[in-house]
Each structure stands twice: as C-alpha cells, then as structure tokens.
Image (cartoon, rainbow, N blue to C red; front, side):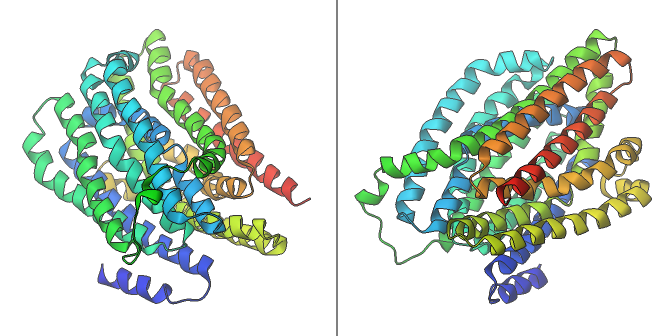
Length: 441
C-alpha cells in the first residue's frame, strides 16, 4: 500500500496533467479493483450461491437508482469546473441542492414501489432490501458531486484515496459481520450489504472533505442555489444521464425479463437464480476487471477533451482520443489473452469455483470492444455529443432486450443473456466510434 501511495506522490509532480491524472487513476483503480475483488472473495466464501444470486438480482435496481440520484451531476461539474467559466463553489452547492431534492423523492418512491419491484423479480424477500437502497442514495450522491469537482480540477488523488478507504471499510464490515449473520435470512443479509454502503460512503465524504481548499470562505451567496448555473448543469447532465439511465433501465429489466420468460419456458426459479448468480456474480465481474483502467481513462479524458475542444485545439484533442483508446485496447488484449488461456486457474484463485468457464470463453473476446466503449462514450460527452451516446444506448438496449426475449424460447438456458450482452457491446461501441469520427470530418 505504501508503494502505491509513493507512486501517487511521484506522478502528482509530473507536468502532463492528462498523463498524471491517468496514471494516478490507474493506480487508484488498481487498488480499488483489488480491494473490490477481496470483497467479492469474502462474500463468495461466506455466503451461498443462491444468496449471491439474489443479491446480484437486486444490483440492477440499485445501480439504476444510483444513476438517477446522481443525475449526471459529476460529469456536468467536471466539465464546468474544467472550463473555468463559473464560480466553482456555486457549481458544487447548486448541484447538492438539486441532488437533495432528487434523492428525497427517490427514497419516498422506493418505499412505495418496493413490493411491486420485488414481485417483478419473483421474490418477495427482496422487498426490504429494495427499500434500503433509498437510504444510501444521499450519501452516494454527495460523494460523487465532490469527486466531480476534483475531476474538473484534474486533481485525482482525493478520489483515489477516498475510494481506497471506502473499500477498506467495506472489507472490515464484511469480515466482521458476514460470519455472524450468514445463517440469517436472505433478506437480512442482502439488506446489510446494501446499508453497509452508508458507512463506506460517509468515510469517503470525510476523506474528500480534508482535500477541499481550507482558506476558502463559504457564505450565504455560495450556498444559495444559482439558477443560471443550475440551468448550465442540467443542460449537460440531462442528455448525459439520459444515456446512463437508459443503460441502467436495460440492466434493471434484465433479471426481470430473463426470469419471467425462462419461467414461461419451463425453467425453475432455483435454476434461473443460480445461473444468473454465476453470470453476474462471477463471470461479468471477472471480465470487467480491466474496467478500472478504462474508467481511469474516461475520467481523466473528460476535462482534457472539454477544455481542448472549447479552445479549438483540434489536433491536440484528436491525439488525446487516440492515446486513450490505444491504452484501453492494449490492456484489454493482455487481459483477454490471460483469461482465455487460464480461465479455470483465475476463477479458482478468485472465487474458489470453476462455475462459468464456458460463459467466459464465449464472451471474453467480445469484451475487447467493451474496454474501449467507456472512454469513447466519455469522449462523445466531452465533445457535446451526449445525444449520440443516448441514441446508441437506446438502440443497444432495445436490441439486448429483444434478443433476450426471442432466444428465451429456444431452451438454451441463460445463453440468451450472454448473446444479447455481446450484441449490445458490439453495436454500441461501433456506433460511438463512427460518431466520434464524424465530429472531425
């Protein structure tokens, strides 16, 4: 751990902000991913596969409401702060004001619709965990808003440090609590896993607070919402969050659709829950392991591209785009080769299971496109082309849902989900690349 923080300090002294930001986020992303994998290992070693499957079934709902509660504010803040055209404090406080209203409404909404969502997932034991999601949203939203400010300032160290401590807190909570509650009901265990995010996010907010400028004075004018700035934030966040919400809606409906149509076709609820748990609890997290790299690139590229494009530095922008995609592709190729050659060894090492190897061998090559999808989407948003990202996500989501429904009648188990995910990755990535190329014609 000390070695990584030494690297953070070293790279923070480098001159190239983009390279510095990327490397810092890479180191932090690597740390976060390793700690995240430790959390997964702890969970999979203590909790049974059925409980993991139920937990993963609720994650699309959790992620959807996180996306709605954030409302694209982190990207908006990062973009506005990097352009340096408005008062940063007003940008942050105006975002917090809007976020507070949104999260409160979502908390109330979840209390009322939790029985309905649980019935959609064909498991009433998920009703209380769904309600618990609402209590985590204010903390997650505030944390993301503060991170957006630091991204705009191209200061990535606060994000890295806060994320690291957030994951460490989650590890400690899981190590201490899961062995004590493993024999409790699925409802209790999953609710604990959801609510533990409150403690980890509070830890993150406290860490971020210590990195905020100390000499800056806050008065009523800054705290009072600025409606002009709110309008600027929303003009960026609405199309941006629209794309993300669409993706999350597709992800939200994924377990509902696959469960419903496989039940119609004669599969048991236990079989669906188990296989869905294997795919979303083991296979997908493993294939998305390099996402710490692509996420680092996408987070670092937003202020760089936004600033360069607004100042008409076209060649500079094009070079940064090429760098980001090349870096993402190289790491993706290395990981894909390793996972294709040694899937059993890696699965056994991380999860102590060989479940899901067949799924991995089928879908892993196509994830090469996914590794460049995240940065290319951030590039579109930085170029004020969030509507194109929205379009690709909309069509990709429709394709995914349609394929899942159609293939469910072929009696091929959970493979409709694997095939639909593959088609979605291919379409969205290629569409976004074409749209970026058109910007510079």
